[in-house]
Image (cartoon, rainbow, N blue to C red; front, side):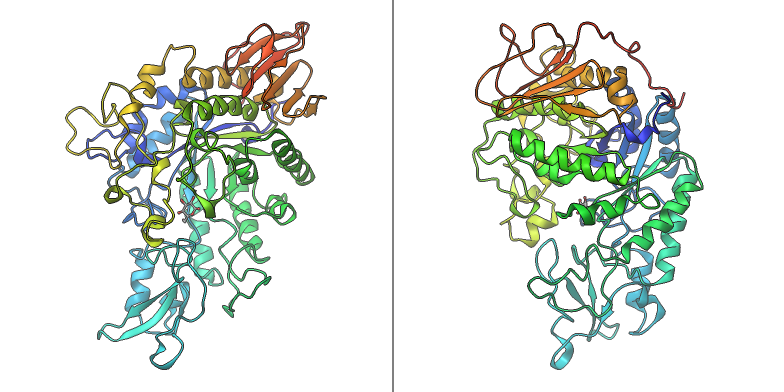
Length: 556
Ligand code: GLC
């Protein structure tokens, strides 16, 4: 069997640049900080890094408001730093995926500034959605659309003479004006941006808010049951066909869509052979810690991916959601973007135990897996950040009724016994941009390294075995076969000799007798798998395929 393309089975690490490692002491993570930690990532055993947006940005939405798509934010470093990082990553066998934000830019982007300076009807305004207001004086927004971050999706401009002018559309914050994708200049610009980064050696593109780009040009009001005029429209697919054509001019480059859609049939359309390679699996992330529901999501995911010929992806956390240690430690373990709830008590010990079990379950599934920085350390959602430190526009625009996403973005603890825990150098001029809990002294990389019971060592071992086992990372399309199991227990085989058992029930589960334990997420007692624990087993007659090490096809 030949190896699959790298992205079909890769373990991809989401690196949230401003919270990863700060080399210059300004309290904000940066690219030299990442470079210095590449050996850590290589030893962890990942195949690729997905970088959160690294472009110049006023950071009204943590970099998802891009002022220049062809440059690096000076707080993070320079284009030379990015080039060095991409090249050095490759020497470690780590590929680079960058985040492209095509639905909107920053209000500081040159095009939007030019649009503001131009009169109504000018070509500069046609790259965005400018419209006159309604009512006498035009002081009612052009329609009633609401921003995803709260409040109206329209903001009024002021003409150079100080009088109120047209309104512009922003489905997110007012600092994030939406592009008009019906405009050919917008399309050509983004295809050029893709080439710019592919030419620099970038291996993949994570496409932000990928279902949203195109809008119904009539900008209609949205009645109950109406199809969305600004999400998942049929014409958005033309964009990805053009992007795929760009990617195909290079070798081994991948397009990954951020698509939050409940309807699997609509979702699968993005995976047609001439569109994206993969999409994120948010139903899995949002699923409660419940065996029957997880099994249903897993089966559903595999079914529609098989129909599309695309590999499934599995993800437990990212920079937009509550960390799963906290989610799984609540009475209600489900998650929805529209009901982030920090009022529920969290049992961190329980959440951590389940997160360990979930890691083994997830990494045994067919396809690629995404890790969000800090999950390998078992970090939890920081729910008690001081209000004056919070930066997320969601928190501000909802008047604090939605706690927002700052709690999963707190800088990583690397070493030492007090903040900044090695995130910044000892002589740093500023503290980390979000304060770290003192309890994280037990979760630093230093504290966990070599502790066989730590989350970090569990991730290192799991990734090592996943890479070594042909049925997992190397041949990610190896089917999974469910075995009969009692309620609350998930048992499945991958390939010939590998078996994953996850016990989500309240009772210990007796493991099959002759199998050897490859890895367990918690202590086993007398051949019993305790509740909230997972294990990888190997039948004794099936030996390891090949010694642990690099996967074939990786950059040398
Ligand atoms: C995506 C990003 C999120 C951002 C939003 C607007 O959902 O993941 O962080 O706020 O798009 O760009």
